[in-house]
Image 1 (tube, rainbow, N blue to C red):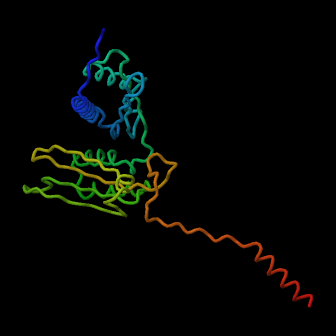
Image 2 (cartoon, one colour; image 1 turned 90 degrees about the vertical axis):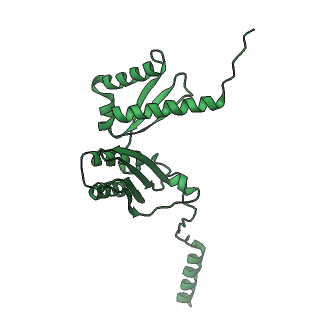
Image 3 (tube, rainbow, N blue to C red; image 1 turned 30 degrees about the vertical axis):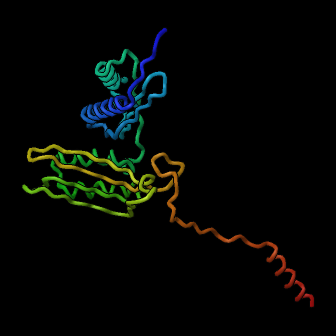
Length: 235
């Protein structure tokens, strides 16, 4: 009689976290020019699926799907999956300004290419507002231009910071940029608009939002007024 071995839940969660962290680190280094903005792991299918979110899917797929097959092969060999044991798919981000990870990667590339700090932050804020975000906040910390570390905050629009709407409306991303003088941290918050039909927007309205509707016309009152006017003319 065969006995099934119980899996320790703590070790399972730790192993899943290490797997996702290592895959994220690998994809962020391999897909620098593709606008990589994170991935989702779907393990409920017959075989696991990694759904990569990016602004340029063609850069991930490559010519005739060559690059995505190479990435898939590397992940399979690294984590011991058999052939076709795990699949990679690409999901395009329609509006870059509503995705905090995409903005953080864009900000990271700007800082690496020696673009001035304020100019890079203002361009990120502008792209978020143009794409329909209610507000955006950029926090940069580290050794910015001098030896002593400090942090700078750039903010525009409307931003909430507490309650359940914080989890429904805010999209937060953190990235690190490595320089010779030290590490610079980037934190971006995006306040998404309310639109239940759009996947990138919030599905639940704000609790303090008030909607004014036009009053309904009373057709019976209009008829009574017309009859009174007709009676007065007859008299």
